[in-house]
Length: 275
Image (tube, rainbow, N blue to C red; front, side, top):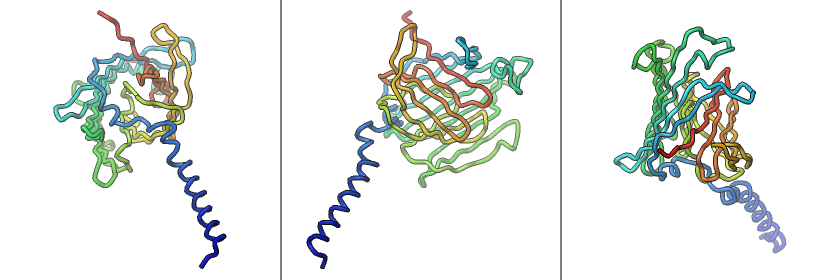
């Protein structure tokens, strides 16, 4: 039988280890709050279509506008939500000054639909790429559905190349957010400095999924709609790129960088105007 002193030492060691684990793994969640997930998003009411300007960030005072985007949230009959977005980009302006520069105007359209269950879980995500000059048939379709084995089943299908027809299973936790790579984020409610989360991105411009680590790094101020506005800065990092999102304190996303190769794209929310 261990002596009284030994039992006290064992109990003290256990308490110290337990306290360290709580401090490392549990306490941060209570201090900074849970990160954004679909459950918070699904509780939001329907929104009117939001318009965004898309520009190439060339490092100067003015960015070069190359397109526009629209997104909205609609309630489904089952109590879930549907997030839809449509992004239109002119490839001539987009790739100006890069190895992919084209002489003629080629207009791309990226359509994304994400369906969320009433419980705030991903039901299905679908991203389509269309070229205006080729008609209404998508040249690439990406679909993602969660499985019962904590996997995300992603299927790529293309009408222009059989090399883009493939299926991939990736690890997926029920609370993970999944997005199309070019869709605007309308809201990120409940942010706190220090929050971290992972998002799976279905990237139509590279035809592959990517995992992004996000963190709320600081509070700052930007000019939006002609006024200084306090925002959270969210930093996103993946294996091949990094980007940022600027989120107003009430969760409204005002500005965001898009993860695209060769160029830096920035989406700027256009303020709603009274008619």
